[in-house]
Each structure stands twice: as C-alpha cells, then as structure tokens.
Amino acid sequence: MDKMKNYTIVFSSLPFGPTDFTYEISQSFFDLFEIETDFENPVINVDLNFEKKSTMLELFFSINGKITVPCDITGENFDQKISNEAKLIVKFGDEFDDTDSEIWIIPRDEYELNIMQILYELIMLSFPVKRVHPDVLEGNIDPEISNLLDEYSIYDISQLEDNDENNDDDDDNDDNIDPRWAKLKDLKP
Image (cartoon, rainbow, N blue to C red):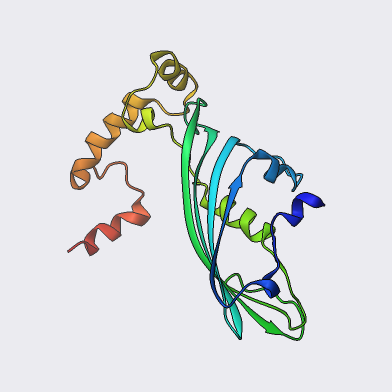
C-alpha cells in the first residue's frame, strides 16, 4: 500500500501553475499489479508536467525507456525502445468518473490524485504490437535460427517466390480461375 502512495499527487498543497514530476519505473512497479508480463528489465522514465488551474488539472505525460522482450520471429531477447505521450484533463464534479480516457471527473472535495493506473495503461500502450529484433530487420539472422525457421515454417519459401513470379502475368493464366469469378476479369479497365 505504501508503494502506491508514491504515485499519489496531493494537488491541494501545490501552487497554481505547472509543477514537474519524474518517475523511474522498474519491475517493482509492474509487480504491484500482480499481472504476469512477457517482458523483463523495464527501465522507463516518466516526465509529468502537472498544471493546476482554478477549475481543472492538466497532466502531460512523456514516457521514454526500454524493455527486454523476445523477438516474435526468432525468440531472441533484445532491448525494445518505447515512448509515448498523453494528456489527461481532470475536472471537478459531483462524483468520480474515469470512463473517458482523456477527461476524468473527480469529486470537488478531493485533494489528491493517484496516477498509478494511468501510468500503467500508458506504458502498456506504448509497447509495440509486433516485436522484431533489429538484426532481423537488417537481414542479419543467425544461420542456425534461419534453418530452424525454414524447418518449421508452414510455407515453402521457394514455392512462394515461384508463385510471386507467376502472379505477375495474371491475364495469361486463366486455367486456374474459378468460373464463377472469371466474369470479374471483364470488369477490369
């Protein structure tokens, strides 16, 4: 519970105007959520520009860092850079409402704001969907891994390359077309 307090901002004691906060996020932050993760060694910096106004609060998040993840293609671990920026507006109302991801409403008598959940969500959303090792992007794959990929691939690479060459002249190869679709060829300009 004490660790959650590290992400609570007591805005009632802050002066009007901007105040900067910095958070260093490590694995212990993710352990607070008791959720299994597929990454290791997170080193993430969050810069928060918190601006207190008379009618609302504005929060500007800037996330930068890296995590160690397995490559989706080769399975090798590598350091994936992450970054994200977001803005949150907090208004005062009758009751708490966080259904909108960009505008929260908190009770008028509230004096503090816990940003732990929003930090978690912003960090998780900054992770790329497809994680590919930089060596794979450059075409430098370990021959041993390349052979394994070829062995367990459901496609025969040479067959795919032959199909690509044959598909260049679609107009000449009408023998393999379903007769129901053959009429669509007449619609070509």
